[in-house]
Image (cartoon, rainbow, N blue to C red; front, side, top):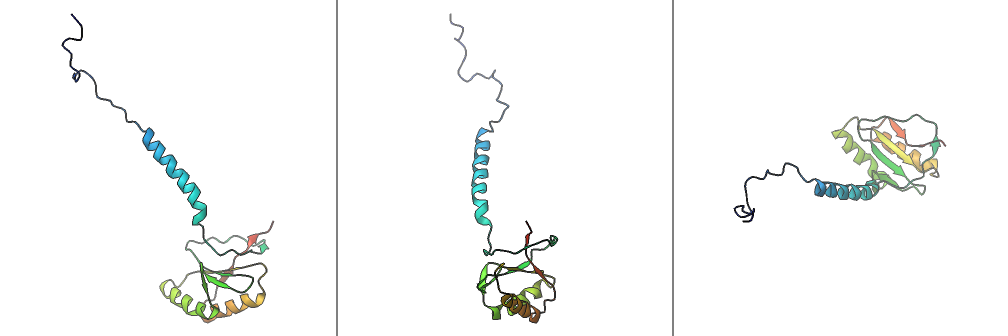
Length: 140
């Protein structure tokens, strides 16, 4: 007689598997990590300007500021959208109605003539903005 005679393929004397195979989950997480590492540098947006170097202290902000960039040729960008100088004052006034204490930063290219920055500051003053921060790079 064979010792396997009365045993079925589906016998009930086996214990259920109590371990979870997490290998597929780890594989998916690693793929997602690689995707985010590759995509993260593309998410940083902004206008490409060469900021001047200074020893000014770093500004700590709780609220994301309104950033106006000035290129060396005088082009103005409100956040990442190009605007004309005469459009800045009404747009900022509208934004400040929603958030009255919205900080305003000016990112001026190091080679920008002071004339462009002065016109922008005058336009901001006409929009009722009294405090403006100039963004610079730490001095090397």
